[in-house]
Image 1 (cartoon, rainbow, N blue to C red):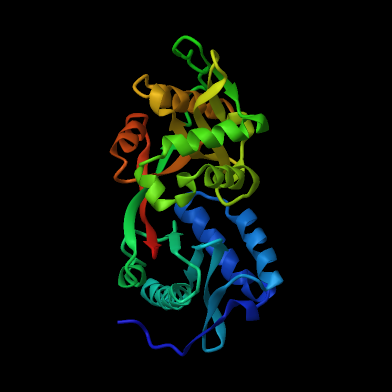
Image 2: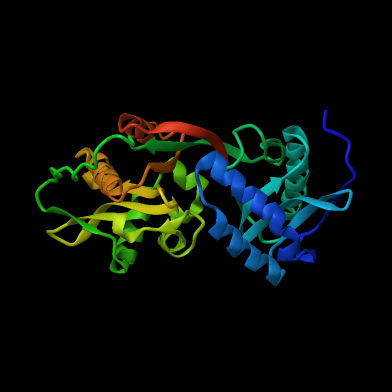
Length: 324
């Protein structure tokens, strides 16, 4: 049973960044421990938003002490649960506080006029640990995997293997000139895909451009690494037919933020070749590990990653509610 508390839930906008900094720095330490992720950049960005007093959300106080928070972001008719985190004397009590915060946030969103869709992916939490509030509200849950690959510290840095690409297919590094065609590829590649149920940005070209912009410009998925992000082009017409995008989430840890191949080019093992090329380049750049996330039901992708040496470090859930 949860330990008795004197819990108060108050509006997030009543609190300053200074009041919430110790809590957010505690969360950043957990990101480092659990996911090898340097979350400091995201923490500082969030603190700036908190000082603007515009983020909808809640803060939990236990006997007057700040012990948890949650917030959301509105994107038109959609709301995204941005975070939920709590600290307590034991894990059970921390989860109880997190659950209470999420109940309050979801109640706010469910009664917000004009909000037709709510999405959430709370990477820090094991699958099944914070799902109760979402299940009770009628959300669909999609288990996802946080996977990791570790470079052998004793292995010499290998040269990038020669790519056996089909005729007229060429590889090049990411450039800002690729934005539009890359967004078109993302939109096409995820049509009818399970991930389009989880992230509705994949469902439109405008959304795919926004998704791409968020990856490249903001630190939510790490700091974008253009040097280790690669594009496959059809030299005969200039179309982008595949890409792997990479960021770094710590000085020695890279994160794959996107890997996709055009439907008409599948079956040529381009995804595997592209990822192997990226991994070899990261090894030469002295990275020690690579992480990525993948939907558990995307069996083909999971098998590809496992075949290349990735293992599941953590299992979490994406939660989605569509009211339309």
